[in-house]
Image (cartoon, rainbow, N blue to C red; front, side):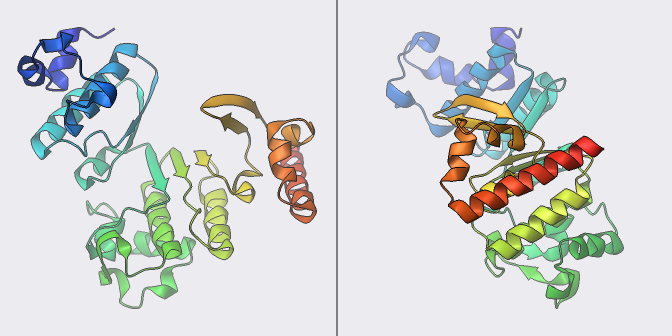
Length: 281
């Protein structure tokens, strides 16, 4: 367990507590109405630290604080106190990406910067041009880059289609060779062809990685090793897709049945083929 003083230090909460009317006994109101966004983020993180869990999913906790505070929290808390934990950090701040040696996160809103394609793929200059072109080739984007690696990318990648943005982020993940890939609705806003390209690249190039996929599009997850079904924040069931589909009363089977007879037959066949392939290994 962590001490109160050590948590207050690594999250720079001393000054905040001193300036509250009654210190740490202050009533903050519904949803922390008297607190700033940065204070809410740091107090939420403090509460998580007190739990002393094994896995931490931090959803952009540094975005609501200034640069110096963010750097302090990252160094003292995330790299410091949580160094022995599994820590999944979702962030839009490029200076922290170089520490993501094991995990990368693909969101439905791709993170791209106003710079060259090369900088977007390799912001810290760790890879050769050949390695970068190979990654682009793997996601079938090589022929689209008419200006080469110096092609300009606008803020958020607005000069590319949604599908191209996701493929660029996937190429970045391929370069880093991460052990864990978290995909949060990454194909929700792309057409079926691009979805298939992304899924094919993931299945071929991340075969030795742990891939956690959050999705509503059932084709995206139907050949996964396991499916975790959630409802209102509660775990309803956890098993292989084919095992869940074998029980007509399961939540997952009912979801599949709502897609129509043709799609249901296709999904069941895909789940069966995936189960047979795993069994034969």
